[in-house]
Length: 192
Length: 243
Image (cartoon, rainbow over all chains, first blue to last red; front, side):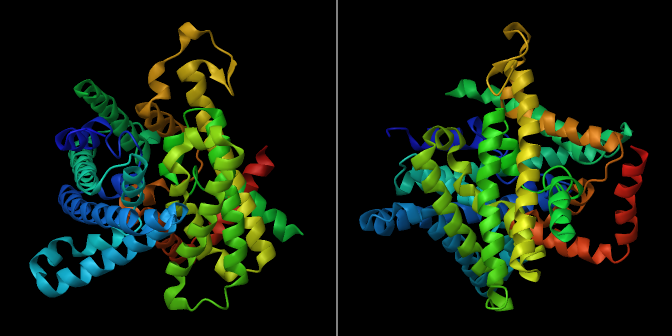
């Protein structure tokens, strides 16, 4: 595990992009990408939540679950911690920085059980990352998510103006666009 | 008896979770690389779904309404952990190839969605049948997509060679192929006039949350169903007669 932090961030953001390569958080990726502004806000909220969640999950795993030999409890513990964490972050922001809350507020509860958050936490444990590496990987993953959803939102604003064959309208064309993006992102595999 | 069979039919065809309701897209896209993975993932989800529906249905009067979602999440997470350990012990190959997607069954929309939309309102028997129907529907949809991908990507189905190796298009076995195959399946369904919920998913976004999207959408469909049930019930009957 000598991978440098930058390599972890680049790797999780671009090479194995969370949406286009690992298929986590597809619901919000297909759903919210209709509007550019909403996508950008959701992206910020995701960066915020995933970074904090992977930090907390990593600490919990290293300090509590592992010493107690309760490795198998990680799924239950992580999902509850993430759900509680989002609630706490939401309350904290509401009280202490209303401006940020205004911008991200409505997206926070939506992320609670977004599979990307749990997926990152579990992947970090699987890869044996330490605390700092976990935070970096969480941050990178979330940045990758944001890049993907903003790109897709841009593509979709163009698609909407086009006259498409009827069966392709709606989900199919969005998924075809995602497929092309995914092919493009495969090119980052060369960065390794 | 008819009620029970109706549940099976509902899950398999009428409200197929992946193809019609568009739930559980994350695992469906991710593990549909080989037909065998599709079956493995489908059956694991089926097991969790049947037991979570059963337990939630049995406890439906005991769980207070305000804390029902956290309670469901705990129940589902425990079942998933049990399933994960069983798979690791008895089918290490499956566990290896499905990896992180097994624990991620916790946040599979289908499970919380069925708990919220069906199991907490019906008797245990019906809830179990609903779980079996939905689980089989998920398994079949997943295996179908995975077979297409395996056939195009490697020229095999369940490891049996069908097309010569030189015909395979590697991209279908990789990430972009998942998006393409599902896009085409949905496009074909659109073309032959099967109504899916994809418009709802793509237009209104289901609030962008994997697990809770199910419940949000179910609530929305229920609101709409007050206008639609007659139309919905009539459609499949007509199809049956025509055949």
